[in-house]
Amino acid sequence: WKRSKRERIWQNFHNLFVTWKGITKNMKKISVSATNDICPQTLFVYGSMNEDDTPDFGLFCWFSYCWFDQLGVICAIGGSKRTLENIRRNKVFSANLVVEDNLPLADYFGTADGRDNNKMDVAVEWEKGTVLNVPILCSSPISFELEVDKEIATGEHNEIVLICHIRNTLKDEKLVNPSITSEEILRTTAAVRTCIDNDYWSWDGRHLGKWHERAKEMKPNVEIGAAARGN
Image (tube, rainbow, N blue to C red; front, side):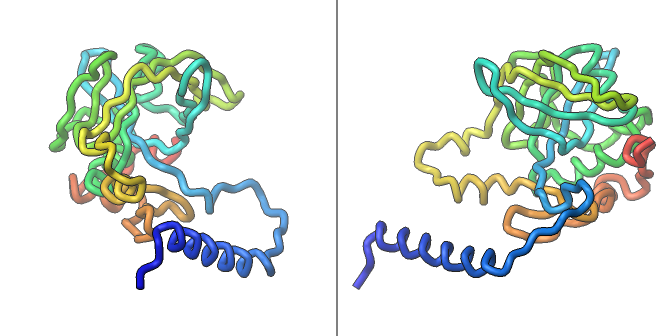
């Protein structure tokens, strides 16, 4: 005897509710200092053009979405970084999703010093955007071509919030198949997230390494740059 699909869905929902009820029954919240240590953040590699029209890539996670007439992006950048200098000059950049397959490269971009002339001396496949003059990371399954609409200063030196128009979205053609389920998209994409103690995690809870560790797979002798140190 086989249960109907509707019955299976309802049973799964009931099981989740019972589990949630058991967890929350004894939950007690206390006040702590401001923290986002258990708030998973998706990672993106920002691509921008240097003054000589060569690409620069950097790793960021303060990224989310907003709405003004249509879907937009809101992100924050802190510290003295070449990426920020390029974005301020060009007013455009790309945001490329970090996934398990390109994590070593992404971690390298978040580790190496952006002002090091040899930073881009690694194997990286990139192309120019379809709409904007921005570098696109080919290993990312989804990339946004972004144009800055507003820059908001936070009052701290080189700490800003950017509100951006999405001028184009590039997605792996496998992910636009209408028959693919949400579960299959998440599993196929294998996006990386970060939270708690500078670690990388998969969406199904596997530990993928610490910040600056995976970079050594790209360049064993890479040194942590000034921006990555918070300088």
